[in-house]
Amino acid sequence: MKFIREAQSLVTVRHIEQGMIKVGNEEITENVILFRDSIQRAWQPGKLQELVEDDLATLIEQRPEIIIFGSGWKPCLPPRALVFALARRGIGFESMDTPAACRTFNILVSEDRDVAAALILDL
Image 1: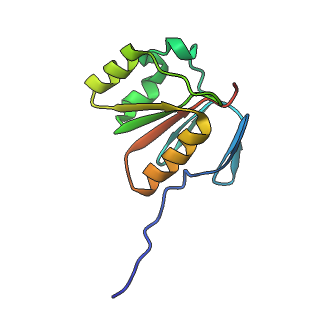
Image 2: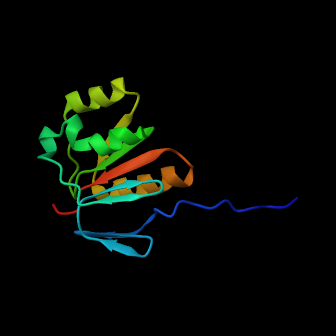
């Protein structure tokens, strides 16, 4: 029997600290959206408690199975209306602090899940 290691996503969070994450060999110091195979830099959402679908338009267009939202270094509950709007589109939405969101993103990507992460780094 021959074992073959499948190629993993190039988008993997390797390190995180307040104000910076390292994705692969690239250091990112701004809010960012991660997909399994790409990075969208300079994402500027509105206030966390007032997030609406338009703030996540790029994510919604990609139709991921689940969106992981990293709210900074303190957990923050998303608006219920947003969660329900995404659920109506068949997209799961989980909110947690950014370090937990990075870990969760890495796990789901390693399981070959269709996941995206919207990460707040500048709070």
